[in-house]
Length: 153
Image (spheres, rainbow, N blue to C red):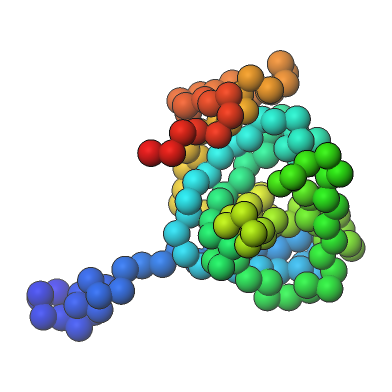
């Protein structure tokens, strides 16, 4: 491919954009994520453990405008935790599967990695709220650990 190739020139002008699709387990609700991933964390806080039913929640963070519902928005239910300013669970009313928490007021969308239709070519950045982790949960492996959110770079 030469430097004057139309496809090479086009790829320089418009860099590749990540696109992911996801859904609930019954398929009633579907969504699409288009844009750059801000972070990918395994969160070990008590709320994430309770909402996922596991030792941690694997969450991909994107800008809220990157996320769009493509099917079944009427089946989405939200439970705002009464004592939390930012935490809520979002799920399918038919099967109970966790779904993205899109919060434009907080400039974030939290995507449960397990709800993606395909495994993205992403690796987690860190394990967060590590000091809250359950003793029986997984070890840190090679990932950095933080007792809260990592400090901005």
